[in-house]
Image (cartoon, rainbow, N blue to C red; front, side, top):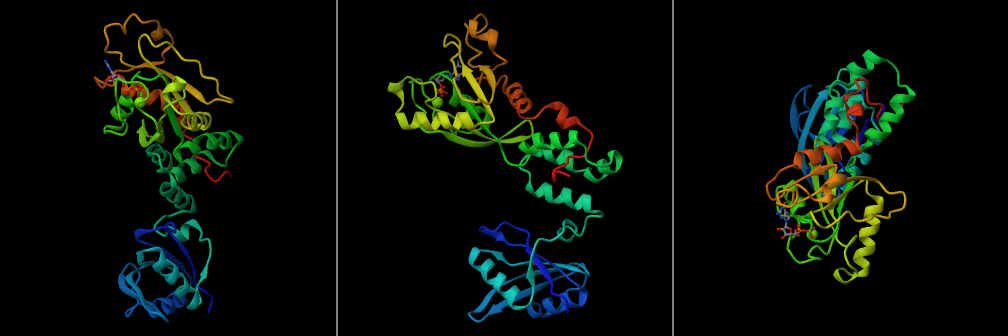
Length: 327
Ligand SMILES: Nc1nc2c(ncn2[C@@H]2O[C@H](COP(=O)(O)OP(=O)(O)O)[C@@H](O)[C@H]2O)c(=O)[nH]1
Ligand SMILES: [Mg+2]
């Protein structure tokens, strides 16, 4: 008997359902499944499973026989349950380990397609799906990874974990109003007195298909009296580590100077473009985008400009496969 190997297919954190993938020889899998299922499920079938240990019943759940050599166990997703199911699997001779992509996604027809399925579960951004959907075809069409692919894959990482985008600028130019308009809900308190936003307010947003952690940043450019010193230093640190700074101003407020070490890409936006003085204001000349949050105008252009600062059109449109595993 060769041990059945298993791995969690869901993260080790509380969730409704946890997912364990089992891989092994058909007879070894049958033996393990018979220890928790009254009736061992046939290929393609499900069965109720029940786990018991010395303390009593751990949990019940569902077992699925995905293929002759693989099965899924789905207990509830509590951390304590997961720990006891883990101990149950060990006690029944199963060995925890990394499973090949095809073992985790037996419905896929190639290891490339299975690797793409793994990445689809991992990527925060919608844009990633466009690149991954036909990943196996792209590899077949264009052949092995080149140095160009490796460099592009480094840039495409922004699609995996959300990058940070901060909005900074003088008080009262409409940064919080813009944040709420882009988020389509009230995230940040807005007011016509300076220094209303005192703590960084983070919100996860989709900007033209790229998921970002957007932070409405107080204090970076406020007068010292409007903000306390610790808030200002937190703001400076967040800005310095952001992938993109949206530098905002409004008619009559000027363009502030930003002195940040090794600073990120800056996207300049002129806000309050609905004001009568906006058309002829001097700030307009250096704005990449103009917006009116009040009239919901220019928001899509801003989202596009930020997305392009994060990842270029060329990198997204490149027909070659995304070399996400670096080889
Ligand atoms: N005309 C106009 N006023 C705006 C716009 N956005 C914000 N404001 C006003 O500007 C003031 C400051 O807004 P707020 O979002 O709190 O600015 P912040 O300090 O930069 O976060 C408020 O009185 C808003 O009503 C806009 O698009 N058009
Ligand atoms: Mg504000």
